Image (cartoon, rainbow, N blue to C red; front, side, top):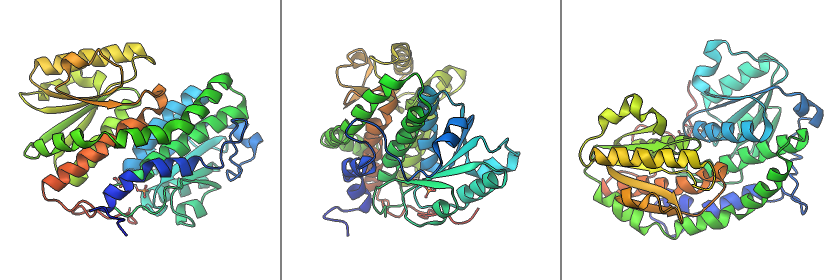
Length: 369
Ligand code: F6R
């Protein structure tokens, strides 16, 4: 049932605060320690892990890209992320000290399943992050951490993505906890911040009307570009993917630092460019570089759509449209920054007369390789 919404996608976007809270539920104890008993990989094994490889497809791949930043920063374990469809064909280096994390909403994606089978054949442990109880990917993995997003019906993934991120953060922080990394104090404050995230997602959802209006005004455009840096880069890729699959528009995400290496040639008059701006309080160097990027593209005619933290005044002079998100720690920003992009794509799809829940040529679970 759509629960009063026109589309499942709208319902699922609205359910995100609850989905995020449910994924955290029971996994943090009163002392702020992580309790992931379901991850049945013994602590001594996790302490010996010397490499993590994440495999996933589509939106889940973007969650994995973000997870890499968190895992490496919080645990200092080298972490790779690879498209599941590419993984086994390049003869990846895997052994029993490699932890493979397979992320999948459906748990039935054939590319991801084949990647994890390959990893297990090489003796690596596989941890699944999955939304569908008892599906094939968790059944074939050594352990599973379920995202508790509830059933996701719309083909385009929304709440599953946010809960995949939460699950990845939990795994990263748990690894930090088990291995006693030097980020001990930071882990505690991050766990607290994570507990506040549902409320912040709710705040974002309450301010989406201008985003919908903006989306409708762009319905006759052919192209939209997305720029981001650090964890904002996968967010840009996710924004572009949502727009492709729902609005059938040409949409591309770039790492903002790559602009000058080619993509800036695409900028022309009135081209909409969405820019995800990192917190000025966190990695301020990155923030300042992105602000320069916004200036550069605007000077070349781009119509800038800027997603920036509340209180970030530096972006104001260069934003044709400004979308505010609550202040969060840098690594958690994707949880709030992605939401406006989901709403944007959904509204553009509607404005263009597309079928939101069932985009053409797509299926909810892709069970062929
Ligand atoms: C995008 C989307 C797809 C899936 C991808 C992986 O909105 O839904 O890109 O994310 O097919 O699917 P799962 O997570 O089920 O393995």
